[in-house]
Each structure stands twice: as structure tokens, then as C-alpha cells.
Amino acid sequence: MEIKDLLKKELMIMDLKASTKMEAIDEMVAKLKEKNIISDEVVFKDLILKREEKSSTGLGEGIAMPHAKTSVVNTPAVLFARSNKGIDYDALDGEPVYIFFMIAASEGAHDLHIDTLAKLSKMLLNDDFTQCLKTCGTPDEVYALVDKYSEKPQEAIKKEVKEAQSTNRKKILAVTACPTGIAHTYMAEAALKEAGEKLGVDVKVETNGADGIKNNLTPNDINEAVGIIVAADKKVETARFNDKRVIVTSTADAIKNAEILIKRVLNNEAPIFKAEADNNPKEDIQEETNSIGRIIYKSIMSGVSNMLPFVIGGGILLALSFVVERFMGENQLFKLLFDVGAGAFHFLIPILAGFIAMSIADKPGFMPGAVAGYMASQGAGFLGGLIGGFIAGYSIIFLKKMTKNMSKQFDGMKSMVIYPIFSLVITGILMYFIIVPIFTKVNLIVANWLNNMGTVNAVVLGAILGGMMSVDMGGPINKAAYTFSIGVFTDTGNGAFMAAVMAGGMVPPLAIALAMTLFKNNFDEKEKQSTISNFILGLSFITEGAIPFAAKEPVKVISSCVIGAAIAGGLTQFWSVSAPAPHGGIFVIPAMPSVHSAIFFIVSIAIGAIISGVIFGILRRNRRNLLFRRSL
Picture 1 (spheres, rainbow, N blue to C red):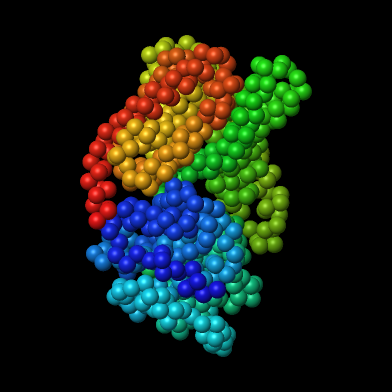
Picture 2 (cartoon, rainbow, N blue to C red):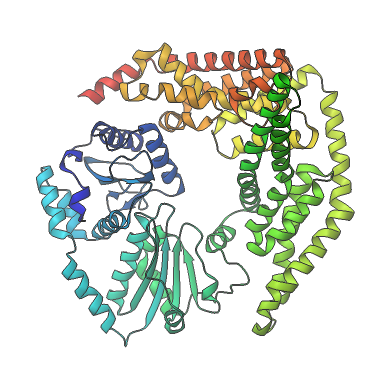
């Protein structure tokens, strides 16, 4: 398969009308939808935006490669677009972007597709190619230019032979990886190889792309190399580089500063890598550049994200068991659902603590962390488990530092004996004598406070939690509110705040859908296509359905949604609504402890969604002018 097989003429936009990054993405996604390349533009755009959040796909030199890999792609394709005036796309060099290649890869994209996209990524590093793209007048000229610069099989073979013959030069190894494994992975590879040719150095690059690991680095390669460059935006295996000079950086840095990185290796400026200190290069970068608060946040989120499947699965099964009990009595089905759901819930705190510890100390941290979580579940609860995870993780870090000067003959003994035994002893002592007793008392105080909290305080706290769910819709503030409510729910069994955050999280997508229903003239046809999906997502407690709108108009969307979500959260507390499970949206209503809770849960959400929907619809009154401009 060649690049021109994916780059279709009917997908080319020779003059983008967009003037902003969001408008450019909208225009390109709309073209993919129009040509039936994708089945759901909301999902596809959401994935495009999530990739942009990790790092801009504006690569510099006037080029951007937004991309996503998802099952909503009907046919893998590459869209070409050009802006004659340039667009501020948050590019790595801060300059406007003129040339866009939007890549739509299917979930099961096979090797041919990925190899083809990799070739395109490498072609964009050719200055002559990109300059010619800016002057092409028709899709036919773009098509011919791509065909001209595509690397033919014979050329690739000659290049491999040339690389194999250069045996007398210094050798540098590299590993490249990006979250989707489509663009940055291969552009970093090409940039490093090109820089190596200029500097007279052999560069072998192992790519961790969407088609798996290619050009694996062998033990012999590693022994011969003067150093290694790990350009990765996700975790890659690095223990094999122990005692070698290693530079850990991002793919964007490798694309932009390949020569500088290689010179650092050649000048012995790269630090000696110690595998036992940390096997996660991405964590190395973050711990060097981020604040303590950021490190703590990332560790907690690692624990919470791995705990959520247990929360959702176990919680919904428990809710179903209550429904069965209410309508069918305590039969065998009730017992099955209850036992399985309760079993999942028993893992919540051990999993939370285990993955917090693992995010800090890699695999050795998981075992003592999980044990700390188990000990916390005996009374110290969610907070005790959270702190136990940090204790376990840093006990491993402490042991690694204490044993770093031991002979390499004892490396096996470290991982099999020293780390597990002594980390467990340290963690166990601190948990048993300090953390569990203290936080058991704290939980009793919290439970007593919740039981005796007045209506006004409950409404205020419910409104705050509900509003937090809509501030960043799946971001840190949203996660903080949800994590707090899960902690209260698991420690005390009180589902009041769970009801507040669930109502608050359901409001944004429902409000967006209602606004498009009530104020149809303020939205374009493409936006209105997501009305039904937003209703479904909102009712299912999936807040992220509103993200594409929030990304486009953050002030209007977030301000209107926070108001309605806060009202919904506060009303659940005013009417003493309690959720029987930590997830599920309207599907937990049959399991509500009373008809009163079920009715007023629905009423609270409806009031909040209507208020937010009306506010957002009114704020979009000037949308007609924008639609008119886009139609020109």
C-alpha cells in the first residue's frame, strides 16, 4: 500500500476557511464525516482533542498532523488541508500552521496502513516536499507531489544496504513511542536518523508504533552503542539499558532537536542510567520537571483510574442485587449479584493503594501497596489506603537507594527478597501502629459529622461537588469531587454525596442536548447531529459528551454547565437523595432506597439540565452570524 491509496483527492481542502485551531479541527472532521470516512464525528473529534491535550500535533515549520485511531473510522484515510493565511495551532515552534494532514486510523489498523502513515510522517521532514505543498493549486498537484516524494521499495532497500555497510562509525540507539503510535513515533525516528547521517553516526531506532515494536534493539546493539535516546510519550521497557548513557525525552523534542540530542550523547553529557532506580522513563521526566503536588496528583489518579472498573462493575452489580431483592426477594440471583458486587468492592482500597505505590516505585511497589490497602480496608478506609500506597511506594524507593551500591551479583536477590520483605515490614509497621488507628478514628468522626450535618451545610457541599463535576469534565477537579464521594461512600456507606456528583456529572451533556433541542437555530447541522448521543451519554453519567463543545467555547459551556450542575447537586441534598451505587446514571434509579429518592433524583437532574441548557442556548444567540461566515 502506498500513501496515495490513503490520501484521497475528494478529502482535500485546498483553502481552509477556519481561523482558529478548533475551527480547523471542526472543518476537517466535518469533511471526513461528509465522505463517510467516520461514523461518529463527536467521538472522533473527542479523541483528536484528547491527543492534542497530551502534546500539540502542530510539529513546527508550518505543519500539523492531528490524528486518532478508533473504531468509528469506517475506512482508514488521510485528509490534506491547507490554510493560505495560516492558523495559530499551538505548534511546537509557536509559528502559524499552513499544512494539515488529519489521519483517521481504524481500531484494528493493520501493518500496511501504519507503515504507510509512517512513510508520510517521514516525508514531512523533507523541506522541499513541504514547501511544494504550500504552492500546489489543485488536489491533482498534491497527489502528484506525494507520489513523487514517496519512498519506493527499491530506494528503501538501497537505504538499508547503505546503513548496514556503515560499520566503522559510532553507534547510537533510540527508542521512539507516542500514545497513538501513528505520527510522532515515526517522525522522531526519521529526524534522529537524518541527524545521524549529518553527524556521521549510525542511528538505529526501535519504534513502538501502532503496529507493535519494530527494529528491536538486540543485546549486541546495546553493548556496541555509545548511548541511547529514549524519545517516548508513554512507558517503554528500559531496564535493558542499565549502566548505559541514556537521554530520556519526548518525541516532540526528538523531532525538533535531534542533532542536539545526538551531540549530547557523543559528548558524554547523557547520564548513566540505573534500571533499579526506575524503569519508567516517562516518570523520570515528570519527576524532574513537575512539582511535588503534580507528582502526588498523578500517583493518586493512577490508583483511582485502576480502581474505577471495580467501582463501576461492583457498584452496578450491587445496585442490581437491590433491585432483584425489592421485586423478587432474597433469591439465588440476588445472592449471586450481591456476592460478586461485594467481592469487587472488597478490592477497591487494595487496588487503589497498590497502583499508587506502583506509580511511584514501578512493579516492586504493587505488593506492599496492595497489602497496605488491605490493612486500611479494616477500618482506616479510603484515606488510609491512599496514604498507605504512598508509604509502600516510597519504602521501595528508600530500599533502592540503600542498596544501589551493592554488587550486581545481588540484583536478583534485591527484587526477589530484599524489596518484598523489607518493604512489607516497613509498610506493615507504619500502617499497623500509626495509619490504621488514626484514620479509623477519623472515619468515625466523618461518619458522625455526616449523620448530624444540617440541611444548609449539606446543600452547600452538594452544590460545590456538583459544580466541580462540570468545571473540567473529566479533569483533575472533576476527579477530585468524584474521588472524595467514592471515599465517603466506601468508608461510611453514605450515598448522599455520590448522588450529588452523579447528578452534577449528568448535567453537562444533557444541557448541551437540551440547548440544541430548544434553540435549534443557534447550532449548525453538524453540531445538532450529536443531540441524541449527548442525551444518552448524559443519562448514563458520562460527562465527556460535552467536551467537544467546551473545547470550542469554554467560557459559555463551562459557566452555564457549572451553574446547572451546582443546582442539581445542591437539590439532591435538599431532598435527601442517596445513590445506591457509585456509577450508572439513571440505571441506578430502580435500586434507589426509596421512591422519594428516585423521584427527586430525576427532578434534581432535570432542573439543573434545563437551567444550564437555557443559559447556554441564550449565550449562543450570535451563532447565526458564525454559521453565515462558515457558509461563505
